[in-house]
View 1 (cartoon, rainbow over the protein chains, first blue to last red):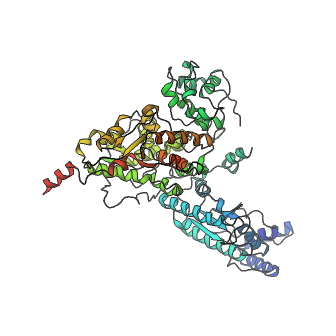
View 2 (cartoon, rainbow over the protein chains, first blue to last red):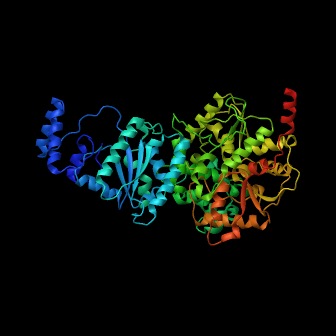
View 3 (cartoon, each protein chain N blue to C red):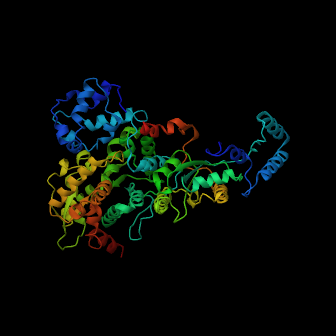
Length: 221
Length: 394
């Protein structure tokens, strides 16, 4: 699991720490929590974490092994609010679940049903779409379009028999780093409870990254 | 993206391409080539024969596979087969298509290949429709539930056609099996080159129908019908059941149905390519309309010479497609009919979409209905047979 891209190094270290109840933390608090984790972890793991930390000269803490299913979650975040909200969560050093891939779109209204269906086709277990609050949209009414598109996707997935809990629409502003972390944590837990998506192709059939986006790359040529 | 690999001889032989006279009838009958001057089926064939380049991905996706060229070809060259084979051979490498609707339809079809699928596709079945779970006759509803959920802004009602078909089967005394776990027939995957996923869908559909003890399957969608009839056999061998289009079933037994006596509205009929040219079902829909007392005003080009709705398996939609659709709608309006009846949900979707052209306003607007819904709405209460059987029970 790679942490979401586009975050500062500090935020990256944070997201690797165990998921806890999201609370805005100051620098000192984050260090304390990292120490606490190292003490709680089993001896072998603690030694390894210590070694890794000393090798890099940082206080990087390894993620403790999590039992069971780790969901694949795709997050479509709008450029103006939600993606900046994710950044806020990062720079505020909020600890939250790292089990998601964030895709920046210029507007949540751009998230066509095809995007969400394609995510499920490529093995996603859940998809979150996040945009600006009503009235805050950079394009005035883009998020209203997002609602229309999302409702359409919901209807299609309902016929397809996909659990409603696997998709979610949220409004997160650039200032709401705390909300971003909370929504991600909630959604990851919700999808984890639902288990792996039945629509996901077998692991061996999942296209490699380069292959999956070959057509996109072809379009860009 | 320019593909340069030469087309292999086997592909050309199977499509009868070596018989090409280069007469150019294919290009002159191609509705796309009328508007898109850079596209020419004749040139594509002659280039392929000359050991030249493959058609580009764009040229491959432009073809509507409507078969108008095959119909006119004096030497029996199967241009659409050549296109289909080339799409298959280059799928994933050169050919990905410029899938319309962002590829949503392709994704839906691929998602339906999953082993465990718990679809809720029978939400449209109202109480007045009699259906069953096990039996000899099945009705294959196709993707209509998905279409209606997806094309909300076009206000299409493709489910009306499916409901009309079930209503007519009920009137004929049949209670069709409707499988809740039915998959997409895979027509568009096959024609888009994705044969692996098409075969998965084909196997699953045949298995699930077989498991319900089905001896005959009736279709409303011409694409499902033709795909089952012609392409499933290549995957699963001989089908364990018979396939029939609803218009064939109703035309055969039209005498058993009671229609209202008043004069029906004047309609015109858009022949779907898969029904008329591919499956050769031209007369049956007309007989059904006549039996229901609907007056039919034929368009200038109809039957096997009908013009395609210009939607080709969700592969491509460009300004030339729009031109073809406008041409067809003008032709339909010229008949003086108030309603355009078609037998294919895709014709309805594509022509309705073209009607939304804001620059043309009412010039091309028309009422559109599915054949089965237009005919079923003229059914007069119960049919003779149903009446007879209910008196026997008493």
